[in-house]
Image 1 (tube, helix red, strand yellow):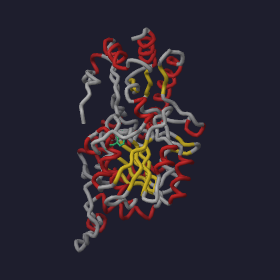
Image 2: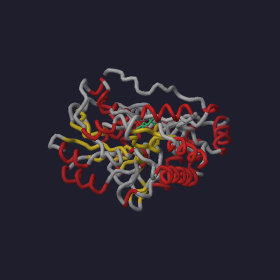
Image 3: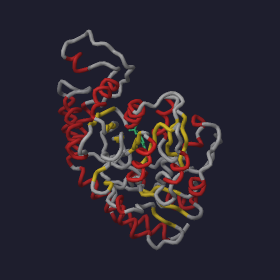
Image 4: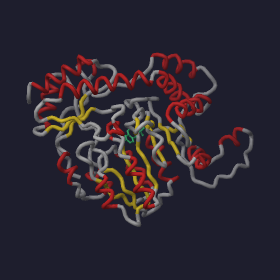
Length: 383
Ligand SMILES: Cc1ncc(COP(=O)(O)O)c(C=O)c1O
């Protein structure tokens, strides 16, 4: 890969202006972590179980969930449980965090990158329909910026072809598809609670499986392949048949997650308010459009990112924003450009068209609608 020098702006110090991301931590989390640190369990203990239960109560109608150490852990487990093996073809997003695709390389899968839909930057359904083949084992989606993909269509494609649908919902916790929270659509859904995500545990993740029968195997895979309950029950003759990992969440993370979950609706409402303010402010700005839902089923979404498409001179706008102490950035980068995914950039016309045009602006609860207005007025001045 040739390194292009596009973004010459290093991370900004939050005391110097408006940063792109800021962790969202409930004040209760501090007491809860203190209490956890002075108790019996700081590794995987009762708080992990409670966090899993509260998460399930809040977001899921059925299926089962498993709290893990990261969204990447959850993706790796989902791919194993979906039966993805050496050489299997998987349709996956080119535009996402590398975490979506790297675990496919652990399994030596054959990734076929899917182009973006230029309006949402989610997967292009047309490209999926063209690329799905009898060799395809699974489709992996990503709900970019929090806007869910079109799951009615995706479920049809996966049913017709008899393949697994695996949803990377790292960005879209709290979003709904139709009436239902994200987590209820696909065979597997994964969530990330990494530091800057809408719901954070510091680092953490959740694997949601539609087929609850997979839970026992998933639990073992999370912990070296061992039946941990039996082991803790004193049974040492406890065979390991499946090579497992060390992918569990710990009680310190779960304590943070439980406190943050209590104020989750406030988090979502505040994020929606900031997003709407940007949308209103940027509506009539020439040369700028905001990535937003295009279908009725996805309008009730919780924004994680505010992404704009800048028709001309993105670097100039970034510079202008930085001169006014506002951080902006790309966040994700098309994965097909990385050497680990192959040496050649793939033919992805929509991605080609947008790769030098998209830009993410600050959206987090350390900022106010006045901050949004300031960013909008800087943009309106031109660059
Ligand atoms: C789309 C997407 N998938 C997966 C991940 C991985 O999550 P984690 O950092 O919790 O492993 C991230 C972000 O970190 C992400 O943005």
